[in-house]
Image 1: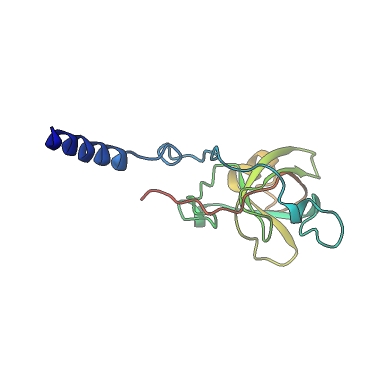
Image 2 (image 1 turned 180 degrees about the vertical axis):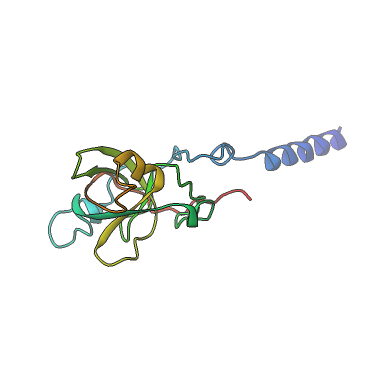
Length: 160
């Protein structure tokens, strides 16, 4: 009887440790269910302590083939056809609405990378985002960036 309990314990241990985590098994980003969606206290306060503005305007560019398939700053693999963007300082995984001021097209993006590294630019959109915002041919455009939900600034682990 004691031997059977030991076998069951070992089999249970192996079964639970070999199963994959549901967060990473689809190959696409899924927001963790335990994420606290409240604005961090230091970002929620107004005045001198606020780290970022909720609405920003400036020039956006885009990045594509050179980075496709490589890791982004938050640890996921860059998909040039996805709807993501790079910002120098916004917390990673922040959700923003980006509006192309020249044609008033807008869409919701997630900040998953750092950049742009060109002076005078505030955002680097994925190729897919630039295509939907209709500025691929121009290369850059004037945008308005509105924070919808502050990110958790977490680094995502990924599967090899």
